[in-house]
Length: 222
Length: 280
Length: 60
Image 1 (cartoon, rainbow over the protein chains, first blue to last red):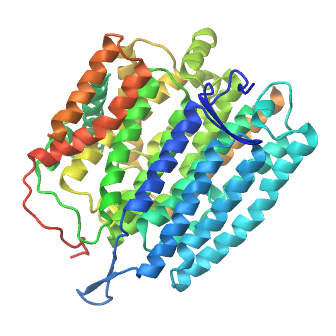
Image 2: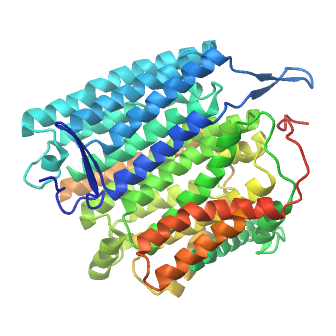
């Protein structure tokens, strides 16, 4: 019953996992993205954070910033949550689930750096949060337009040539994902990455790149 | 397959050497011999190696392995004429490698390199536009289909020059000494590679030589199509020499100018794409 | 030890793909996993390592 429209640009369908009406699937492309998300989530779980070296101004002295255990636990928890949300988004077979996981990635991205008490990082996280929140409007709007015009959110239906998805819905989806941290809207994200805890901060970047790669496939296939 | 991988590694290192030599000659210097980068990688691999005391150990080593893995995978995608969407994916994942390299050591210079790597994310968008345009024209993202399309309709380089120019800029922004190479600029020592020395550096050299080989090879396959492998190598060399000219003659841009230039390139491709869609 | 194992995996995968005993994508996958470890372990095997970790370079 579940077979993707041929030719699907992500490659042939390899495996389908159904949770009731929530259907996830692996194609060579989504499997590659999934493997990468798993890899970096595992790295976030097993690795210790780095200690950032700072030079004391005007001298030879340097000091390292250590992360307190409570903060480390919270950062790691948020990084794992972000990794799981990314995993959900890259293998989702349903446009709404994809948008839902994408917005969850936005929230956890703020969580990863929120515990770090530094004015610049928190300001950047706040600004990033505003952009990400605004971006959820076109994101869910795109999914809503797709549902309203085609009557379905399932990628098995949408990837077929029988259903024409309006261009504005595709543009909204891309815009929404870009708002979570891609090129013109990433300005605050660059400052966020100043926070210590490299394995966790890296997940912020992994998640937005993987989401963008996935939305490119979805939009080109529809 | 492993033979082709090793061939690509050594050819890539040789291309890096030729790149340095060409830049030096253009700037009126003698320059190192063209096999210098091969010797460099060997030299680094013999050197004493440890993980910096402040580094996040697992991440510090893992990004090196990831860099090698993704570019070997990219090479096999080209070899098996797979999907260029996957190639695009791997190119984007390289961003995470750059980022992880810089952040994992705790070094301030690495961190600056990593932050610059985030803000130069604009270099990925021209590639997205390229992929979209190719899909729109050829109706497929399988490399085998694209090559077949070019065999029937002539090279894409002549059919869509602005798209080829966008990919050219993408390759240029990943070359050593390029005007866009802000992440490894000398004012931040070696940027995100500052702390990866010895064996790590040798492994990264191997990975980056694969990257250069793959990007040049991909450009030739995507925009010129199926020609004998010897001709592909010659075209790759010519492409590299043209890149060397740009790198030798352009000063390194400041981070904000880099982003501006890359965004302008993206905007031009976007305008071209819209024009193509409207005319079609 | 690790160098030999990963190197052998790479060569075996390449050979079995050439002899049609393994699909090309399977051999590719094996090499993609084994090759990075081979390169790094090879360097770590023949390098001149005695040292302890040091703090990062912080400028002259």
